[in-house]
Length: 244
Image (tube, rainbow, N blue to C red; front, side, top):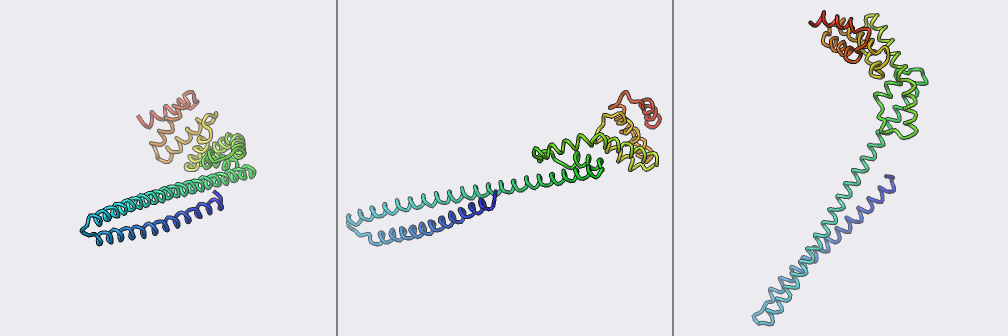
């Protein structure tokens, strides 16, 4: 919604509420006048039939006018209430519009960041941004094409680099970094020739750290996901020796 639309809505709101206020004042004044006329008619009530008849006619007319005024007041109050509901709905739509566009802007910023990482040669960061930080639902056609292109180029290469890094960390006994890198590899791709290696070294990294439950979980996952792995016998022996 642009500024002109918002101004138009608020001008309409001011006019409507001002008109409503004036009508209510006029209605209230008319109500007071009617009540006063009723009192005057009652005070002038005489003993003759003609006076009684005139009083009944005046009273009936006053009551009828009073009923009409009450109906007008109720109708006006209903109109004001309906406008309040419309105004609240408009404000909600405006808020939703702002939130949606804010999310789009954030995702476009992240896509630009991923693109910069790619051209800087940091494909690992590029792949992680694409898979973990960007919500594709907020990308339009051209942006979606760029997203998919970057993902296709980087995801497998980044997964392989994370695997190599993790293996080097494992050999250097830096088990925390080994676990992090190997898990990053699996989060990107888990069906490469080295994917079972990742679970294997994750399991042993946890084992070296003394975290036996996580070590057992990693090794069992290896057997479940890769039943033909070359590590199968070694893992079965590991589990039997340490958990039976």
